[in-house]
Length: 238
Image (cartoon, rainbow, N blue to C red; front, side, top):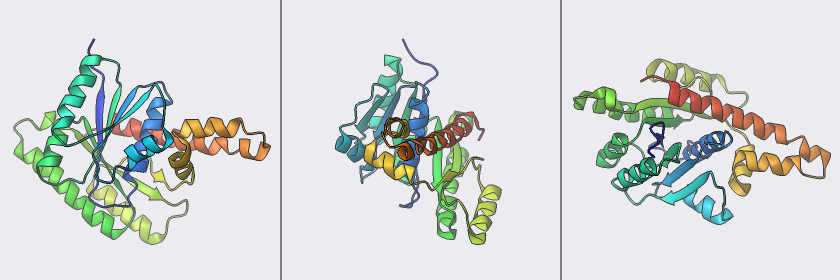
């Protein structure tokens, strides 16, 4: 039976280092921690997400990670997931917004998410991405059928500098920005080495060392942050 509630979320940015794959993996952690079944498609040339899954030989009934050969393949992947009826979220890790590739991805997505670090360079590149999206709205006869677009302020330190805060203020004025920031956390490095955030939290909880067990709460905090971001994405307006 078709799952009419299935959502396709594409994470894209034209600049490396903004934490695109890390953000996507955190969103997957948020969804699977609530029992949602996810399909993650890796369309980025670096294949960081696919490498992560293969390296860990990751086995989770709520997550399947696949390679995405090209944008056109997304239609079949989403159609198959829709028809199968058990997938709640399809997450796509992809190239930045440029040309036909991005246009096709947008056509089969419900939500577009663009992570942005708090630098002037990232701001300028995000403006380019947002202009591409606005161009899509102008070119289509039915803009209401296009995915939503949101910026996530990413890799934010616990104590951002004044310059960073100024960039954040500019971003809020220019784009639809998710309220919850994606903070720079070492827990995401542990996730890269050991599994989804909730998996690592469980490992910490079971550690015989009491001090290590107390670290589980930091992973829970990271999951809650990702849940807030995910809710902002799927509940937000264009």
